[in-house]
Image: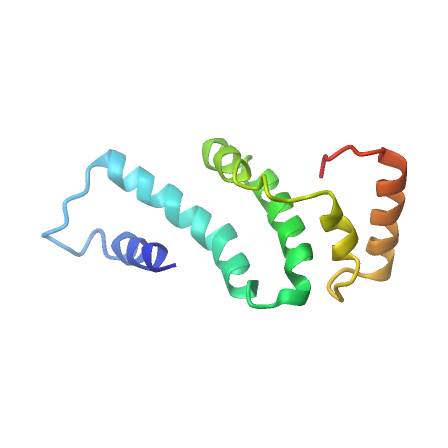
Length: 121
């Protein structure tokens, strides 16, 4: 989180600091990193302390990264590559959270029963 905060400060003050002369490439990379951090990472980081909702948060992260590919496909694909640790049982554990509605839970159960192991989200 510290890297994101420092990069966010650089992004916010990039035009005000004479000592900080960013190249166009550096500025693009900072914008990409800050966009990912603000849109995806911060929400997940804040909710990480809620252990009961961890399985649901992991599934929501997976979905968010899939949608983020439309914004920045390179970062979206790279970040989703780090979700190798998500087992199929995560869907069942997500049913114990109070976050999804009963209707959403029922849909997940039906999809799990009908898909036969298909891992698409």
